[in-house]
Image 1: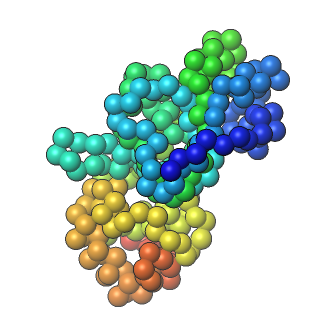
Image 2: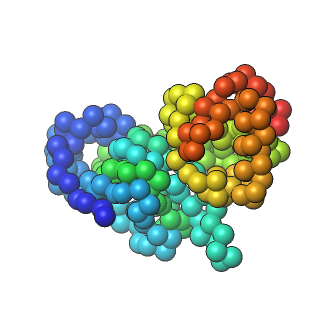
Length: 231
């Protein structure tokens, strides 16, 4: 069950440099007074598609998935967010309600800052506004670049790309616990669950990866990179 916790103010926060670095003391106090940090358990929903957008969110610890709930009851995972990522930026000013849902795939700590405070800071501080817009553009570019890369690949290439993303950009390790199910992996890369299971088994048989329960070990990084590049 989610839990609101008390944390140090924004002046002392190690995450301040991500976007609030150039704010003065008064501005940081205003942010501190209008934010809360919430701890979520794995599987808990942070926001649902259709909820009102009221806060600026960033992920301090854990992992979350951002996904679209379609009319056919087949969710499409848009992206996986990791610590220090800003989540919800794609709709923060353009829409009144979230066009997607966010849920935790690991125990996570998320900081919520009142959106009206963010708006007021952008109006009064051009430098902050510029940094904020740059971050929004970066988030958007990363998501669409990832979707474009996946769309160009065959099934083996999509699996290779995703395993390398987890290894290099999320866990920074050749061995990691896959934080999503085979079904969710299929939703992320637009494949069937059966094909995901089949290709993972092929990679294991070819000794490209090792699989033990949820633990993935990349045994031959070079071959996986080649499949990613040419798949």
